[in-house]
Image 1 (cartoon, rainbow, N blue to C red):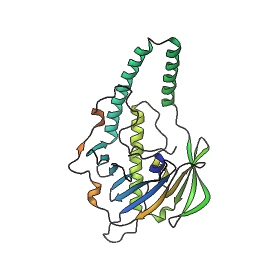
Image 2: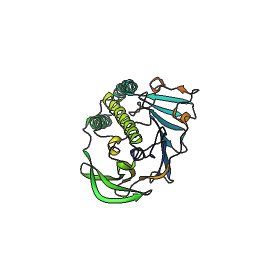
Image 3: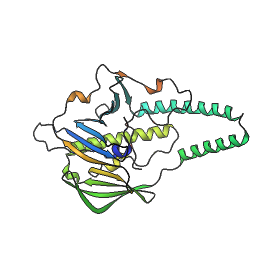
Length: 286
């Protein structure tokens, strides 16, 4: 699933009031513009202690099950799914590091036969790359403004996210009083889980973990829009449905098989990717 960080930062909860034993399901649609020639839509659905999200038209979606503390990446085309939790991501990243180290050793052997100027240039690039991995993350803060807008009939207040004191995006957040508390909590819980996965992935690779993740954008209310600055891509709430969702859509199909990325054949022409295999890895606010 090609979920960008801006889209993922906008995935939060809004639900109807509940009474008695009634259950409130929520389906939110966000429209993403500026990422590609055509608009894209991202849908997030909340059903009790499960959250499903994905891009419209994609064969892949993610499913978070809070009762199992597990994040699933489901591919409906291959009928496979990936299970991700902190232990699994640490094991995967350990193998990634082993593969990267082997790649480095192979590169050193190749570099030994290179002309001196080429070898020095390549060594410098490698050193720069390793230094960047260990560099401290940029300072990020979100400042609330007095600006207000109305989106989908809801008033929201704009906060500006700054990186190293430079504005990078505006987030329009509606009052938390307009949301169902249980749904909002479940969304924040999911994003906190994703943030934790991102931290474990970074640590296992010897990288500096991010100081803030996507959960920080959702704790104070319902994010109706995120706009990259000065006039970059944006995602905005474009649809809200409150009809009951199908429970079966929140379970991995019984005939699907587990796919473990760590057991896949290693690449032959390049080092293993540094990112975890699960596409629902937590986005950061940067």
